[in-house]
Image (cartoon, rainbow, N blue to C red; front, side, top):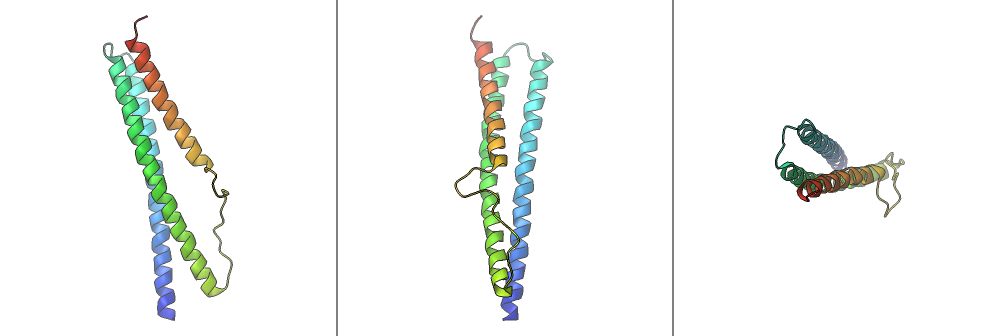
Length: 140
């Protein structure tokens, strides 16, 4: 029985490690999206691109869409890893007859605040870039 417990503990530790990795990866992608959008805005704002600004803005919108897809994928993995941590903790706690430490902060069927904020930020960037592209293409 002790062998099964040590295996369960090792699995739990691995699940925690994978969750932390996915969480860090998600936030790194978000930071990169912010840096890329900021760099493109700087290039356009510094007037380094006189012609074809609309093309740069359209490219920025496309990059933002790709970042959004990538971030959403990472978040799905992150929440799957978190669920694995919760299952592992519940199993270990049941075995040891103690209460789990991890609690659900967000009620089921609600979008977590960070997920909402990331979506709003990314969609705002996409819409701003598309609006700028249209503004620069359509004559006066």
